[in-house]
Amino acid sequence: MHNTEVIEEPANIATLTQRYTEQAVAFIVNNRNSPFFLYVAHFLPHIPLIVSDRFRGRSGMGAYGDAVQELDWSVGQIIGALSDNGIDSNTLIIFTSDHGPWYQGSAANLRGRKGETFEGGVRVPFIARFPGRIPGGEVRQELASNMDVLPTIAALCGAPFPPNPLDGVDIWPLLTGVQTAINRDVLLYFDGWHIQCARLSTWKLHVARYNSMVWGPLPVGGLLNLPLPNPELYQLGVDPDERCDVANDNPETVSSIIARIEALLPTFPSQVKNDWDYTMSLEVQATPTGAFPILKGP
Image (cartoon, rainbow, N blue to C red; front, side, top):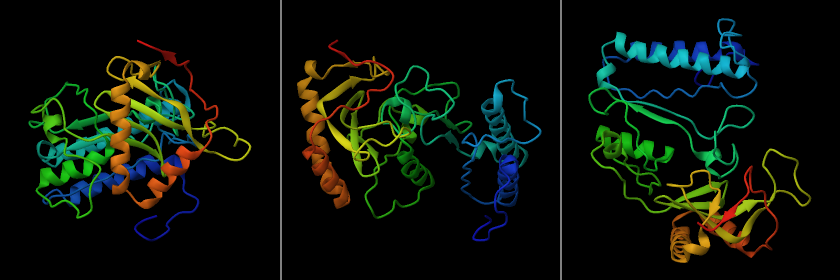
């Protein structure tokens, strides 16, 4: 589509990355003399993996590798357009994703994939570049979320925040290295209306989980968000793989996070609380634990 006009149906997937890139570069050229916001959401490397003739077979890593290589080319073209038009040093670039891999790609040693609230399903690369403002070659270990992008950009531009409460926070001090931590309440991990986890600093508490992998066959009775027999607590600072449940050793932390979840419920649409109450009323049943066994204790 172009604006509200359907210009091609079905879409020629093999040309999408190239055409998105051409549109992005043209937008930069046409707006180089005024402030602008450009959001480029590439289709690839989502399936079906169909790349342009230029990149087909080029990576030596199959169709997925070819798709990633073409995506890399696109990012280079966009950054090059900023440089060619003399605005590279006055432009914030953010490169990130919305979730972990599903069919291909790798979550490395992390548990879970797309559709799960284990770290492999939600932890993604987040690269921010702003020459002269964000130091290069540094890594921040603090938690950040895609929900933080809006308040961060708004604050940087001096724009007023929307009137509704925001779940994100301004992470600009974190990106620039002015601060090493950002003050925020627990960050809730949702799937639809379902709360499944909550994170406070480096602690992550699992409270509910589906009764089947979301990409597998539906179980008898349908997909249910079920309460865990006991909440599972992971210290992501030393256990990012979520292998060792330390809830029994940290009951105060478990209680504190659950209390914070319940305190936040009234701030969400009523469906969130209704679903939470329903989930907590269900009978405990077996739920998938991902690729790794859950260990207890330190």
